[in-house]
Length: 151
Image (spheres, rainbow, N blue to C red):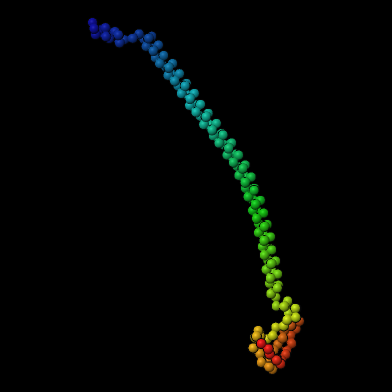
């Protein structure tokens, strides 16, 4: 009897069992809907963050284009300044070279004295009375003989 009673309590009415299963399915459907909504909300949140970052990246690209343009302008200006500096240096060196031009020295009335062997005379002690010399002037040359030396 106890056993029948025990088994009787275990056996439930099929309608009751279906209602229990329906409640469980309804509960699972609610949980599934909440989970899907939460998942959707997370995806929307991520998408918004990505969109924000993408808009920020587009701004960065525009700023980089502007920065590149400024750098290009600075490079051109630096090139112009360097070119001008080189022209100034070249003009200064040309003037310095011109000042050292022996022809200009001769134009001012000086002469280049060469000994008979062709060496340039830079000291009166290199010469003796009667030595022949060649005088190179601004226009032409002349031969001469030493008549007197002074140191």
